[in-house]
Length: 72
Image 1 (cartoon, helix red, strand yellow):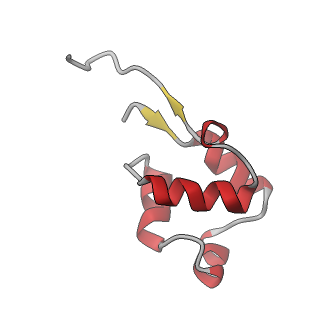
Image 2: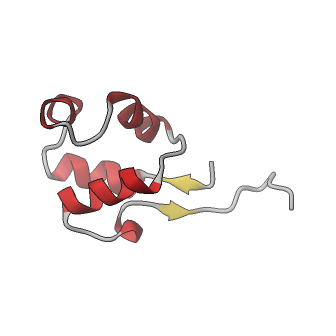
């Protein structure tokens, strides 16, 4: 995946947000949390919710990296 969520994972850890708090506070679904942790695709609604909770902008949560084997 060319989108990396390392920044998001770090911010969540710094904020004390765990899979338990995500479930308890209904921030995002467990399947979405798993996608983030595994580097899958998430939608813009999820990004917006996370930006609201973490008080940041989308670029603070993710970054684009080119893949060597990507074809145009």
